[in-house]
Image (tube, rainbow over all chains, first blue to last red; front, side, top):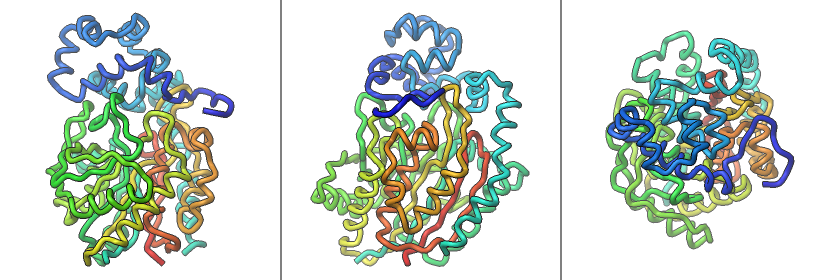
Length: 126
Length: 278
């Protein structure tokens, strides 16, 4: 990927896909309710079965989204891990930005002031 | 000759599926989003498509990172949804159109797009939510051809490549000998980012540029690199690539029938755009 890094942004490329393979494979297994239950019954054994690295095991244990990303996690798979605990994308957004969930939602809502203008932006093309 | 009627592009945020299941369409938070679909549904009722070609990205339901096709085309008689791990309801199985699937596959491969073909393919929220939005409370009255674009693992196909892929699909549909009517449904976006310290970023200005350009100047978007798209619209905002494929299918000139832009839906700038062939 050419170009300067984008602050606060991680591209899931071949390097990360290799690093995160075991972690993402475990999270992919959480599509199945039976596997989610097995994970909850013995997290350490479940991580071991998928061959997670120590960095990945610690990030899972700490429920740290930024550490999971650094360990090669892809957010679409991590969302399945977060789902086990009933966490949605505002919850994980708040965790990553250091905001409260309410502050994170307020920040998103602040963009609503652009809705009318962008919706109307098409009229000149009709 | 089959006929392409036009295209409907919409966001596919999972929370929409939750809102549909809980019947929150008239809730204060959701109403401005759901109300935007009235015009799209009226357009569909007026034109009565037989087949929907759906351009979307899979989010780790059908494809894992063991095998990640850049472009994949469904060729199944029936498509089923399944548990995605975080509680979104599934929908009844959806009928496929295998004849058109294979006509598209044959057409694009002859056009040098070497796609993955899928006779079995689970469909995730990126397919099921748009179907529920466009045909609420009933099985969709169309057969579908799902086309998946890799927006998950870089390198992603470039915006320029996506437009050309769409154009190849459009030629294949135009050459398909049937009198059926086709609507193109593209899903995802617009700007949003779920991961990293920049999570929650939204870029209304770039979203507006995308919506305006898609009507008749899609090549304005094909100059952006993948990195540029990530910077301007977020790590998941790159789902605009699905819209660019869909726009390519429509051909040279379109007329914008309807647009609705609404932020926020979950972490996303949601958008709906209906384009008719001019």
